[in-house]
Length: 357
Image 1 (cartoon, rainbow, N blue to C red):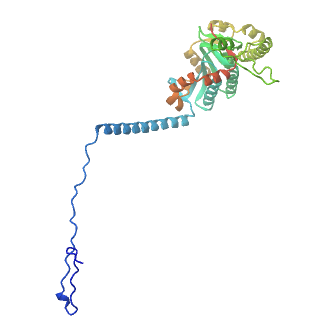
Image 2 (tube, helix red, strand yellow):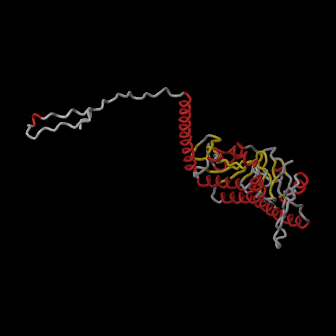
Image 3 (tube, one colour):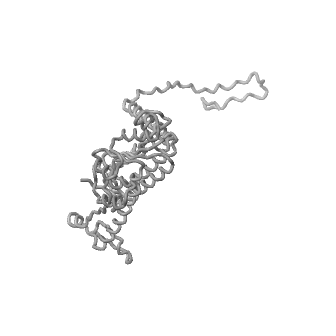
């Protein structure tokens, strides 16, 4: 069929030769159309700036990740403790300083134990000085620290104590058994005794906030709410608490008697809970010498027979969580009533603590 004229092609007769046949017209082909390539328009300034910001943030995150990994790796190799040089000297023979500062709690005793273990296993550490700046605190960790000192002494290494501002109550309990104890002239030393502390909030809740606490105890646990802030202690409560206090006070006196090699009667005369300055404490045999930290270092160096030892100070580096979230966590915890209540509830009411003047 002729596509142009809509007529059939002529058919050659059978007797015509192949050479005389009329060929069909050629089929027209589509002419290709040239389409120029699309050109990108100019980038918007805003999107380019945003892209650069994203790239910058990714680079900073990567660098921070590397630094934190190096930090955590260093902590792993050091076993969690770091050292700071206090006085230069021979690294083959060293003296380690361990700080006992602030109120004593379970975290304090854990760090104290770790530092003593570090000094014990380090063959280059010949002796230890406990630098005391503490009014005491909880009874149990204070007693545990006293036991750690005794265990350390059995390893054959000397351990001294240097009281700086205050070494009272639980802090004195913890260090009473050291080989030699020093205090500065104006240090506050002693406060051999224990105390019960509780805040009764009943009236404040009812009168100021209009809150009436409701406490229901099981029928056979009459003393379940002893020490509760929601009621005043009864006479029976006070009697029982007093017995507990006297029992712990007796233990404290025995610790001082054995650690300071004194008569029990002599210790009881000093166990009124009072504190003494350095000079008074020396006269009452609560310390062995008056001196500052450098004097204690020199004395320990001489006793051990060292020559120019390096003096180092152990400290706990901040954890990764503290580095990243310390401020925000501290702020949020202060507003979290449940966490503050848990902190208060887990703090023992009976403490070996000097409240100060």
